[in-house]
Image (cartoon, rainbow, N blue to C red):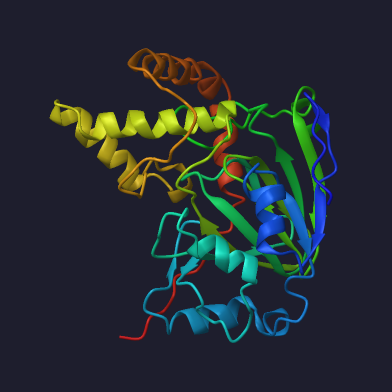
Length: 316
């Protein structure tokens, strides 16, 4: 069975599997070791490939009480619009496993125009993501969490510093591929990615979930765990102004920059994190302020290129 071939640094070809892959095979080769994979043909027979347009989705989602527009995507409950698509069995087993944290919403829908770009970041919440290309085509770039990129302090969004991707990849474990209509990519937790929309209309369906425990030991996973521990400390701080600052940040920051752990228990990891370790993490994050300020003028031009979903006109 093919797996991703990784070296200390350099390019690797992403693994590819058929849509008939079993949960057991997927779990052994990709879910447990947290390796990315493209699963081909998952959505080939979906009615969504013909039906879904931005106007169709807005009309249908407006009828769903649980659906909403977020900063960059639409949220919807699991199995909403399921007459248009089918959830692969191995995906359902991941979502329903006793080793997975329960969550209210598993699904996102992305609607993008040609040349829309999601700049370098990793997904917060230590989520695993299944991303199906329902319509159009996208170019994906991935960087391993073992060879991390610099992020804005305390966020999962990478500093926009004007570097070309070739410069960025110099000492990174990375891959690059196109996701074609009907195919799915599995993005493991805290893998850095950048995505470019290639067609006039690009629509993607996601499933998200978080495992209760991980054996991964990447530098980025450690950073993410420490990030949530620091936020927990700040939101419970004895000084009111500190608590309010942390709470206001999470209330007003874009969804992809908030530091919120949604579960009652932390994820179990191999890390033993000390108070000194958290202080060191805090210092490292503050140390990135210089680079952030140096390249601050590059943030606004990027944000102007983002496509934000239109509000859903709910029936009252």
